[in-house]
Length: 358
Image (cartoon, rainbow, N blue to C red; front, side):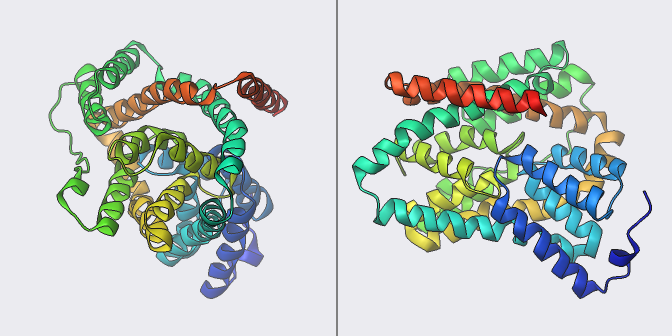
């Protein structure tokens, strides 16, 4: 498809405004999770504007899947970089994140200041079963990614065993990444640095919040749904909030527009008000700006070094396996009465119907 000459001739500042309008609007209307976000981006940048070809867009999607962080947000950054260089990367990412941040701040303010505990309990009764249905549908769609061969099945089993015996999630992912390298090739060198659990070393609350979410944003693989795995350990496990409030945060992240990772905004607000929301959002999204800038090199590395590609594959597979463990725990919180079961069934039926129609 020939390039759109109208847009190709645009001045740099006009291109940045194009990115603000495009990704800012997607941040306002983009409900449905990463898959829906990427589909919206494809229609606008490939079919409508011809900024990139179909083949190049597909390669960018695959590259974003190779690095940690929220895939759809990193796609906004990568497309911004493709359109307007490093300024486009920053503008594309911020334009997609900021509207969602504002919306979630408004929702969590109402949650904390306006709604009564009984109203929250009633909302939770139907929202949490819907979230379980969404995660179950996502997990089912990722099953072929998690287990593409027998070696992937071994990684899945190792991840599940690690989770059941109580090994911390980051250590589980490191273990299954190394296991994947051993299963697929002679390990010469990994060339991969995993983020350390730094938050336990610092005492000021805002710094703790920032480092915990920076850690999560640096290592999380798969999709926004894998976020559940880390939040249960890093937030509930630290005693920062109850399981029920975490489920509320996850629900808000699912049902508001923009990145699912704005669940961090909700949690940050709950912990330390607006400052906590801002610092948690900064922490979880900051690594994505770096990863998005390195996407091209990551693709090359994964092709040149078999061990590197095997490690990434193992971490991705292990992340999906850990989702199953969290889904089981979510189910015990969600199915409190017959209404919750019916809500789950209806939500799952709607999701399946929508996937059949596509």
